[in-house]
Length: 63
Image (tube, rainbow, N blue to C red; front, side):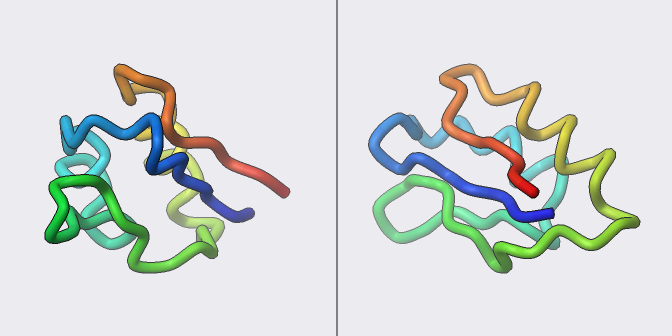
């Protein structure tokens, strides 16, 4: 699976970073940036939790 971030929607709440720091980080602009676009099978549940927890729906998982 892959993860995508809509940086235009991101407001920098960083909930995703606190949930899955192996995938997400905060850039210099205060918005989330991806450390990897590929979500390993062992990370799918955590990545889905990050997607579901984003208050502005800036994240999505794709096949």
